[in-house]
Image (tube, rainbow, N blue to C red; front, top):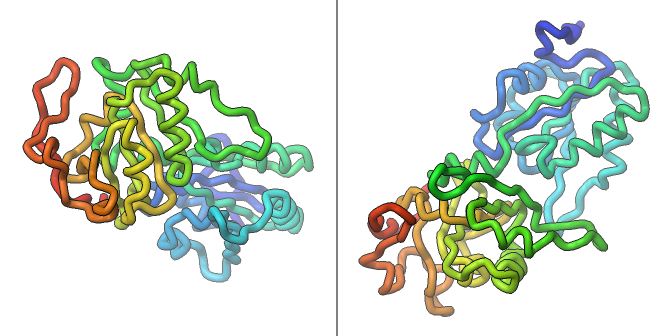
Amino acid sequence: MHPQPSHESPSAPADGHVWLVGAGPGDPDLITLRGLRALQAADVVFHDSLTAPELLSHCRPGALRISVGKRAGQHSVPQEDIHVLLAAHARAGLAVVRLKGGDPFIFGRGGEEMESLRAQGIPVTVVPGVTAASGCAAATGIPLTHRDLAAGVCLMTAHRRDGARDPDWTSLAADRQRTLVFYMGLSQAGHVGTELLLHGLPGTTPAALVSQGATSRQKAVRCTLAGLARAARRRELESPCLIVIGDVVALADPALVPWVEDLPEHEAGHPGKAPADRASGAISVPGQNDRPAASPTACPA
């Protein structure tokens, strides 16, 4: 028997109930206690490809583990099929956990899954998780907001459905006191950079790319908005990759996020060769003294 959820202690999934659990951005330690308890009590766990594999070791013996992950350019389970699978297992009286990378409600399609389950009368509970923006920010020392540099933050997805309208680039470029974060951004970095430049955001605006953030495989680089497309072609950067744009990027830990702006094309993919104008270098932050040059090697989180 599984403990029934209650308003006082909703810590484990009940039979015939689906829990949408945020696993965090990659580090298995970043799942919440509530999410971990749900995972430990589940009969069946549907997990994404971006969730830390170590988390599955917390499943109870005999629990069914099913991968339904999505990766760009690879075969994946269609979203509609995931809806069917979640509902079918819940109707069979099982305690179901849908383990999702980051937070279920931030570019995790958790809202779509919740809608589908509710429409079928299946109870669903959402457990929030650390989203990639805050996870990567913490892992690189980039404060997404700052009283002197950024009064707000905007989370965007760089990939959109076919036929979907483009973002309001004019609005995004107009507010210089806002940090812009683009999820799933590696292949779209050139497009993002070009549109923001065309709509008025200065090419000198600091930008960062954080690949596989908040994991032991993390790699990150800094550049300016004008150099974003070139920086995204560096060989050490892989998906999933987050783009952060705004003055707060200049505060990144230089040992974790080296500057790579203006590398000659033939040197792309060779971290550590700092351009001459950065080697003695200073990162200019409004209201602060120049900062020391970046370390030449990106370190894991």
